[in-house]
Length: 112
Ligand code: AMP
Ligand code: ZN
Image (cartoon, rainbow, N blue to C red; front, side, top):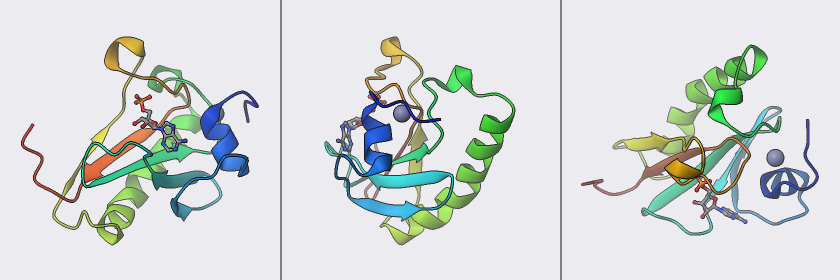
């Protein structure tokens, strides 16, 4: 499903530009516009849902396949020595874009 008012759905549709590093039928990975580490990528499912807590059934399947693919994508983008994956669940955790996304942070020592 696509939400026409959602920023990341607009990125999926190409209505808003992004620096894509990987795309397949069910996921997209692009560079975060305000990187918080030397490498900061966002991995999103193409199927719009807001929160990690909305993930059930088929959505968990997609998230699993994303987790299978991310090591390769991370390694190809400067995180061959490791990276951190973050999902912010809800406003209290700092979520600002309500289309489920995984932050991939690396390319440097993460001493925090
Ligand atoms: P969160 O705070 O977990 O919801 O993360 C949202 C992330 O999206 C932030 O790290 C933002 O810098 C990033 N972001 C917002 N707008 C864009 C955009 N147009 N292109 C790429 N990243 C974006
Ligand atoms: Zn969306």
